[in-house]
Image (cartoon, rainbow over all chains, first blue to last red; front, side, top):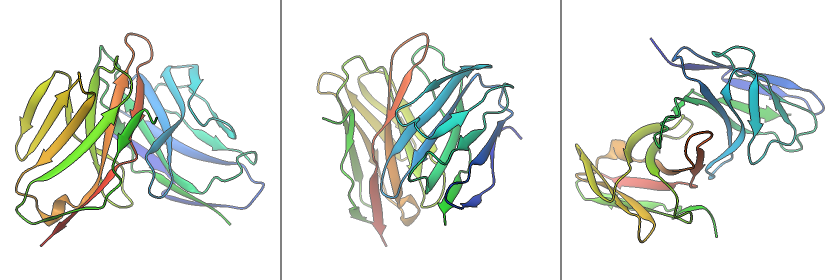
Length: 114
Length: 113
């Protein structure tokens, strides 16, 4: 089955720790995205990548880092510089083509800072 | 002004009624428009997309786009309790290169049995 997987489903972090959220897709999509969702809020873009070895900051990139060494994988690191990291993190992928850009979402990782 | 605006709700409708969800956007160059449904604690799933002015129907769902007025709406006919969720509007701008996707904050729909 094609799809996007994220792990872990739940993650607990102590203050001052860096943590890495995994995102893998087997849809052969070129573009991948990381979003953050806070309670009652929409999705805010953290980082996106259109091709391997290239990525761009989104609207709220401070305190986060990413890598895109393989087409299938786009891990997100939440660093200690992110002051309020508790949120629901969603990874998505798409084939950007023309004006059509349906994004397929993974199941999400819920991060809690203890 | 937010780029994509939605009424947060909750919008309550009785079972069997028509639910009308609205979304306005600020960028006149926006090209395509998506409606996602998100159940509590879950990830968004695509309901419909629309590019052209007018209506697009898919089963109980109808998307309506009016580019002149910069709004897009989603109608859900014969609403069911299983339709209770948050509905996110997403707007695509740009062409070629990176197409920016902007999400609204979502409208929470409650269908009352």
